[in-house]
Image 1 (cartoon, one colour):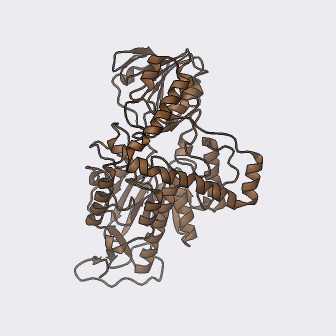
Image 2 (image 1 turned 135 degrees about the horizontal axis):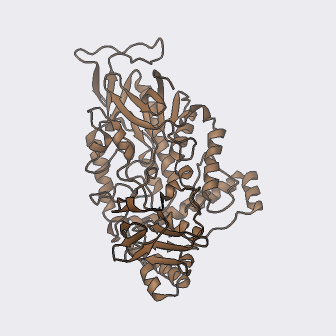
Image 3 (image 1 turned 90 degrees about the horizontal axis):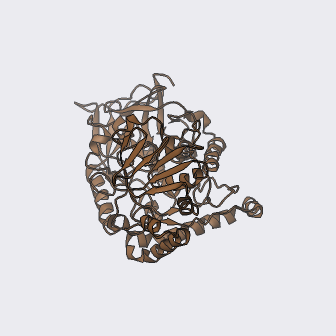
Length: 518
């Protein structure tokens, strides 16, 4: 890119959200856009997470775009390599390659209040854009806790999302820190090869059986020849999960039956009563994400595995010390400690109309209008923004809903005409956030008795959507201009198309604010 490159839309990130945004822009007839990607290839989370055993816990036919069905999924739950291949396929089929800018990490985005556009500085150059669609996602920046003494550890240290494939774990003493979705896949994958595996568990997860199998050749043939059969399969998977939402959001007590099934799952796999007690959570199932695995519990019963039912407190050379005083020797440490979800680093790189960063605007908690627009950040939208996460279904459903909203946002800018921007009104953002948080009060995520990554530093759930995907799709079907201030520039900015007529100058100012509906 060149110093003076200007585009209508800049998309940040090339995971599901970013590629979906690119496809939708092209379908809207917009080709003047770029997709800025800090890495050297597409895939987002499914590029970065390549650890042993990495797979999705949402069924394949539901974890794909509705506009890009894949009849060739090899398993009912797909592995990382298959999902990444699918995203590469999407980039090719929808001719997205010319729009991709690899090795272009965004270092700063600044709103220009006079020119009504964003100045975007990247590691690959600088450009400007009328609209920014931030699709970096909440699972993009790994979180490694600041454990005292970690600098004294002589062995290998890495995060599950930055797996070091050049380091051979065979015959090593490995410490696994954390028991989240990544850890329960890594543990059984590496257990047979390591000399000793010590799992540091701060809180046990609820784990249910994973009903996974190979999708047969005749099934794939049927989906190729009769696409409606794949649509029906997707619809059934979606419908079952929609029916489950009430238990998570309104009647958590109904999850008791599921909890009993989960306890039975522990009992079948773990015969040692002491180990079983350590693995049994004391909070309501669903408060943290329910995990799926058929191999996690059996791996923990193997003779070369130790479960430390306490978090890692400090490191003294090659000795890891838990909060309860338990000590373990290790040659390598793997952190499965999650991501910066409620404190996304990208927020520190977005400077809005009043000179504040998005991180400063969100100091008391993330909030945006319909999970997309933040007050004071005109023509900036997020995909998978605040309170758009799900606890029991496919995030692709939420992404596609936000793509509907993004498409209408850009349409409205075209209808308004000229150099124009939409800035979410603070009152509209607050009203939306208030409704979401009121609904959140009775959900299992807030009442289940756990502390999860759904909650921010203030204990507020700024991550999950407290309703059905159908409700969210209805709420994001179109942009309501009454929820936005319309900003107009007095004259065109450099980079406007040649021959475009300038907007009339407003006396005493280079831009004016027009009340929506006036």
